[in-house]
Length: 579
Image (cartoon, rainbow, N blue to C red; front, top):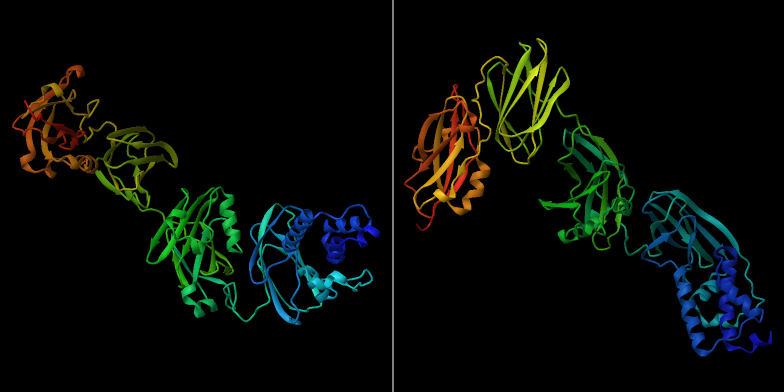
């Protein structure tokens, strides 16, 4: 081998590559051994000074891409069906020292193994570190070696292996994902005296369900020893979802990300609202942080509650199964440990109380918009033809009517709405009312035989009040409104308001309230009129004695034969400032 023997470069690197070849021949399948064989076979020339330096740099990077860091958590990305291998060699003097390896799958189940290559560990260790002593190794130096598997696991649980290391052994970790591309975290440590990267779990890591309600579940768990020792650096975080339990925090974060949203790196660091995505809602109250993620599979809720080990989860849906996972998180290192998850089903919502309706009687119902609770009314028909009347007082209301269990009407109502229905004697009608706004809504309901004269007055085609801009003066305005073919009483009221009061006045108006709620000074006039020709059933009034450049709120009330008032839509008009 004249070319190799005369080359300082070849002599300098041959020993190192021979060692790597020995390791790779067993398990690594390293492409680097091809370079050694090429040198032995005189197929390449010694590189120049610049290429020699480049090779040294690449060789250094290659070595260290395979070495598993001691005392640090390493993220490993796995491609489907392609194994990935890492190794570690202990320093001399660590004979029979304990070490631990913790592997956390962050998605699908994986397979992983620990293999040990018993050989001259000092020999292999020096080679991996590039010690100069290996440069003089001759071809005749060959250490006997035995490869054996000391641990293997398949699944998606967090697993920790604890063993005793020997300086005469080299360890190799092999990881494989057979389902899809994924990532895992690996933590190796040989220092068992300076504490733990991961918070400790109690001897019994189960979560106990101690209370179940219609919309709440109360949980408790035993304290982590880490909380008792380092209270200021440790906290508990709870994950609530409707799909399944998660065996690690990174598995939960991966699942949320895969649903189409970005997620802050850990629950422990999700303390800033600036990290939140549009699909997330953050709630901070009583030193508890809640983050709600809107995902395709439902709602994923994260709550961090400090070091409390009992918590009542609020605002759940009745008759729904939820899964609960508790993680104890180290705020300094971001490392976490998972308690054994649990699940519970909230109680069924009790049947809403049903109020019986009587012919001709008006019922006013106030609906809770925040909790979206429905209100039920029941009526047993005493006539074949009946009529339901709904007057919307405030907000927005959805009406659903069934007859003997079958839907006969369902819609959002506005103003005054009539439903004329035909059936049989003793048919059972159920009316369900629900607010479609977050604020409270209110509605009046009446049922009566079809032939009975309704208590509510006959309405015009429109309940709008019109004002005439050209007829405005500094102290008067002219308004007009439609009437009906039925002689009725109309009363006009006015109220002086400020610019910043307009929106609130129009939004807060109760359309079912009558003039009795108004101050006497606001009354302008009352009049009777009708016209058999609807085209001419229009009336107008000029209201005088107003102040210049001032806003006024005008209301018109219509009274039918029964005396029940109907309020027209309020109209805001401003008098002219200069005339």
